[in-house]
Length: 154
Ligand SMILES: [Zn+2]
Ligand SMILES: [Zn+2]
Picture (cartoon, helix red, strand yellow):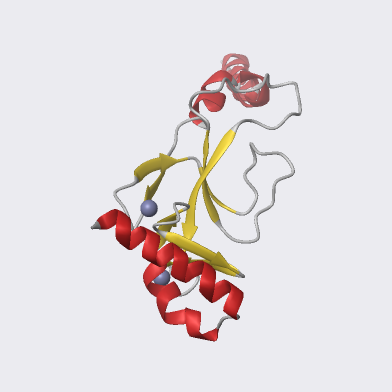
């Protein structure tokens, strides 16, 4: 009788060991890889109609090797280019869609009608406010941009 009970307990312990061990090997690789290709971050430009789902927001997109932006950017993998093979350490094609205005933090795309870059990115409305603090050269550039974007909208 005692022997029987021991046998059952031993078996149970074996069973638990068996379930715990191969964790690492069981991990499927493919679904994870597919998963990271799904764009989950929403990008809405505050200046135009652009609305996209992107893969990354930040300074160092993991799929653009060696790239480091001076500010946070919305980045997506280029949907028209095949991804590089996993085993090659080469950067993937990617598109930088936009960033956040350094003053009001609204998202803006890279279109000259939506954002302006001088030491940091600004949406055009903030740029209009800020330009008086900028050197003449930067003022001239944004004025040109502002009048061009106004011409486009009218
Ligand atoms: Zn825009
Ligand atoms: Zn702004």
